[in-house]
Image 1 (cartoon, rainbow, N blue to C red):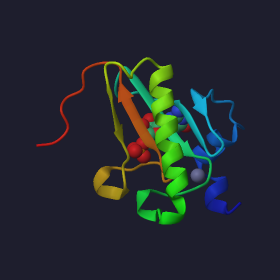
Image 2 (tube, protein in one colour):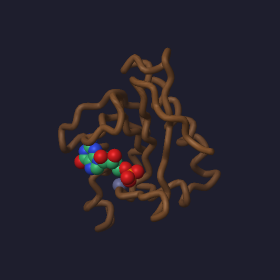
Image 3 (cartoon, helix red, strand yellow):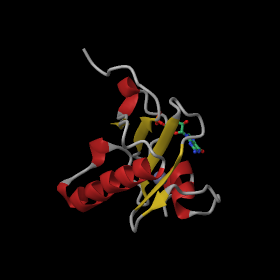
Image 4 (spheres, rainbow, N blue to C red):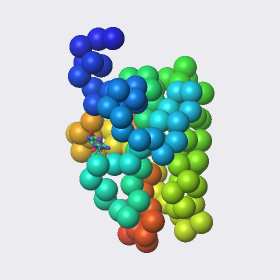
Amino acid sequence: VTASQSDCIFCKIASGDLGVPFVHESAGTVAFLDQAPQAREHILVVPKQHIVSVDELTRENDELLGELFETARRAAVLRNMNASGYRIVTNVGPDAGQTVFHMHLHVVGGEPLGHFGK
Ligand code: 5GP
Ligand code: ZN
């Protein structure tokens, strides 16, 4: 484990060492509640492996990407967000305002969200 990874909050959460409860867990991913929810439901889905952002992905990560979306979908079902719908967002770098440099999917819903885009 490198210095940057031992300092990474999402590596620590994903390892289970901080005792943060998981909404769902798979072999290579975990889902947990965001500490500062931006919607009625706000889940974070992260790979257990330290990947900085989507910018770092290669086709080597294809299986992991499928697993991240599967975990997001299952977590949305477990939190009863699936029937009414939800949004999946991942921030990459400064213009997106990324603050935690361990890749994560935001899964938000549980209430009507403003339409994204336009
Ligand atoms: P970003 O801005 O990088 O896309 O998203 C980082 C997210 O992680 C924010 O929504 C923030 O509230 C959440 N977050 C940061 N630190 C922690 C933490 O220690 N525990 C939890 N549960 N969420 C965190
Ligand atoms: Zn990490």
